[in-house]
Length: 425
Image 1 (cartoon, rainbow, N blue to C red):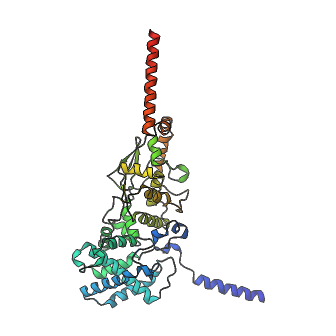
Image 2: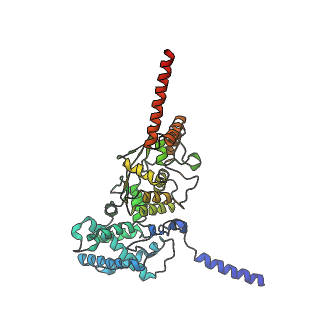
Image 3: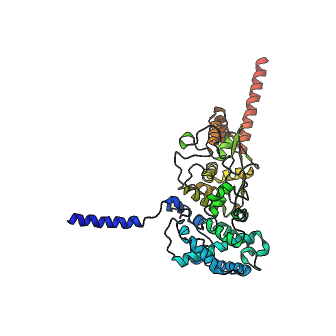
């Protein structure tokens, strides 16, 4: 009898837990960065001036922008002569769907959550509209009057944890402008974020077939910056799993084996080529926001269910291989591949030396640059290239060493000539 009672108690306990079980992660689209990834550089994932969504809401250092959210809502409502209630009702209809997008529990009650959806969503939509149409801006608006605010907003709105589901923005855009013109909203967002991207290849529109895949603003920028699927194919015949390729040496070591570097202006930013001893790479601009931008895109790819095309992670891994020290950065700067706005080569090398720490790369994952790595390593393994590398490293590593080797060579030639003349005489 006692065992039956115990079994019944356990049954009730498990049933309660099953009833409160969260949905599978595949339904989530907005996560918190896990601790292992966050601790490498926590500041890269933290907003500077604005909280979007529930994860950073209420932080003291972000309260300044809460007033601007209200001001943008008021300015819009007065311009359109609309009542705020119709927007509240629209957000209430999307509340449950929105809550299901967040992987972490949200403590806000229904009223607080709907208010957050409306204020954050209206602010973003109005910001994008006013960025494109100057005549919509309120006079003396500090958001567009101060560069540091504009730069910080661009950064904060592309943080992995600082997102609002894209369907909320679409709904508000439908109510503000012409319904079902979501490609127009995407265009405005891509225009707004154009300055923060560190390289070319950015398109100002999204392919119609990809529009439905957009989860939020960071996802929009990610899916737009990547080349089309027709371009995403392996370089070379080598298989793209980890057991089939090896990492490449740094830029200085590659130069020692005769590899040259060239800036590639054409094509997509991620298209790295190696042919006839020349590695061609698109120019990369490094500024204050670049590390945060890359880290949050990598975090987005880490939580993506598509294991095939984690292209930003793969690209950053290539740069991590090429850059081991400030000398590697200086070499790539001289060839126009890196445009260093930080002004400090050591700072750039530190970024890339740490940026893939705690990033999960499984052995069976696809690696986009496996073919390039295979060609580079084949070049490095050739005997003549290894000999030339040893010669440059041991005897031609400074101007005085080169002069000494040249002098020794001249002396050897003169000695040979003297010997020949002596024999003839």
